[in-house]
Length: 222
Image (cartoon, rainbow, N blue to C red; front, side):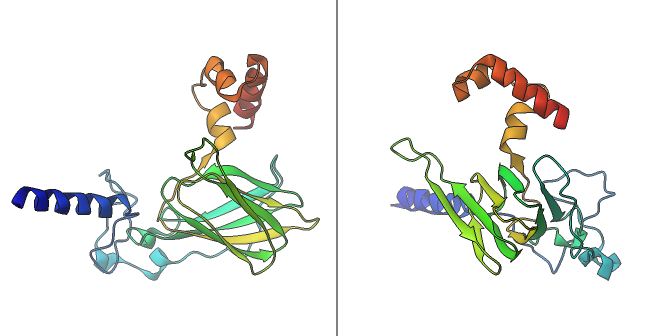
């Protein structure tokens, strides 16, 4: 009986680790030491006796981001890189500004779930499920107005689009100190070095000349 019990315990531990996001802190705080030469999965802590209020503070989120770009949006991130005191706390946030008809393009956060609240304007938002058993990918989407909240599950492709004629603003909270972002089009067509156009042409079922055009476009914009 000992062997089955041991297997069950190991599987339970593995399951709990699988669903974990950022690791739980083992002290009050672990202010990131950005000057440390040591590389770890996260950030090295500085001496807690040296912690200051500025380690837990950032101003300026009331200021609109510059949306004068090809997609008409701007993300102002507030993660461990901006607030060292977020290290090990498993949370971050962002301000997202949209010009009229601006788009926060389809992207994923590999390390965090995102929740947004619309502060101004009207946004069409959505995410796509992972591959279903029938081979489909289901789109779950909704039009949001001021005060509405929407959740994008960790790792899933999602987007936000300003469908109004005025500027829009959303505040996002994310369940990681450094959730990361992969903008789908940029990653596929703007990678360095480039992905083979044979691969992308077959994946998207288009002619290689179109792939070459998109790669040139995204390389230039990146």
